[in-house]
Length: 253
Image (cartoon, rainbow, N blue to C red):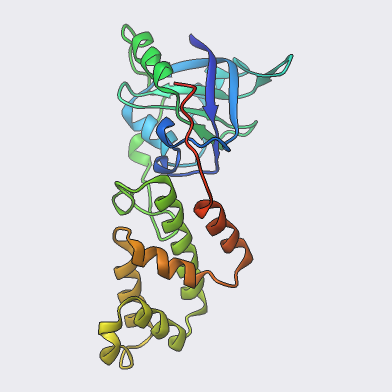
């Protein structure tokens, strides 16, 4: 078993899509950076890596058994053991996970650049392990609140978060399914469609609105997002966090 020591992590909790587990250049000063005193490093197949990075399902039992209580986190003078925590790589990408005692990768993190390079150096003479993972039985599914990577490709951390916020607002709009409300928001998004909108039913309006908003990101997307979530405290709080000052980290490189 390979091990790394003094590993800096920035946990993203409950993220089922790898694009939301930010790489180092998007880490912020107000993120909760943690130091792992020791953590096992495992070279795995591309299929298993994708499964861990982009979902939150049970991990293969052989993998869990191999890493059980082999990772430690240091907090002040205390050194505490983690039940199931590990760095995994498929040779082209890297992710760290911690199950916080469960059997699914609840928390995920990327590594800082110099530790990424160390991972690649350490696995040069090893072979990828599948840990009996059956890739044929696994099929990743995307939906409005778990967008396909092509819908967020090229976006910054802030833009991805705001787009997810927009999707949350749209999801509530779809749940209510009020025709006049749907027509209002489609007119707000695409005023040129106004002459036709009043003849559309709920499904037609919804399809036009969602199809228009799910592609890309622009100031128009941000504008309608801000308006759509107004009056919803939980969503407004996310909006405030993402639109506040956010300095990136540089000292850990």
